Image (cartoon, rainbow over all chains, first blue to last red; front, side):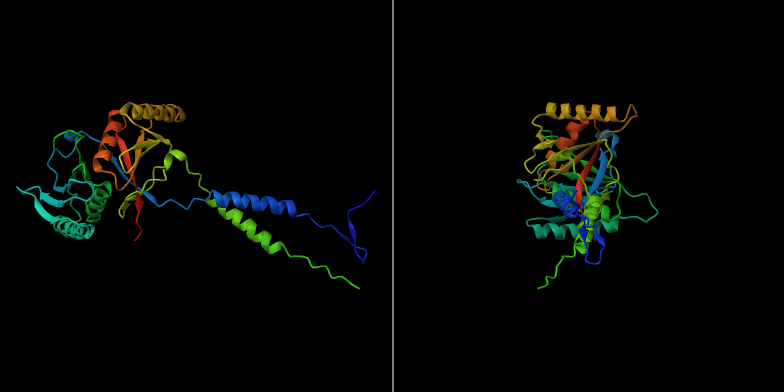
Length: 165
Length: 143
């Protein structure tokens, strides 16, 4: 019977492990994991629930942020802010370009800062009333500014297609 | 004449390969097809909350740029399509929870260039189909 053991010149036996299949398998596993690799998602969430208007702040929010829709889908044409005691909403700024939108958002943040009560007080509910043609990205940007200003009770006022405001 | 045998030292290579395998095995993340849709550009939000609810009571709906609603890779053309999908998922979730009451949460992955109207209509349709809780997915901007 032939032995596969190699005889060393000094008389010892070299029991070499055949690593080729292991390397093949290791490379196949590596290729599989590299191909299916997904970087950790940077997704986050904004939670909420849909309530009929009667269950919301009853149309009397502490602050109302109104995003006036432009005729075409995109950022709002103008942003208005109405405090609970005001008879008319205040124009925060008109928007024509993307840069205008960023400037108006900064102005809105300043105005919201003025409306913010003491940190101990219960945060005022803020309602965002956005026209249907306002882009979702713009709405989320406004929502982000409001949340960053310390207002955590945020409502969205919406209408269905064909429904009058 | 003597021949010197030149063996390649495979030990460092094997170490590296096994470490790489270990890394990929630990970070592997099999994303379900119904939870992603490649063609959607989510809005970027700084103040969004990290994902706490990643449980099985979520129903994913993608709203594309033009308002098309996609659930589980299928376009939901009508309210009835969406209602059927939500009902099927609700039944599935109920069966998995073995009778334990679970609130079904609709996860809306809306494109930032979609109109607010399309998002509201989707949420409203979900509410009409009996799912009142929602979650809007966004990209968290760090810093």
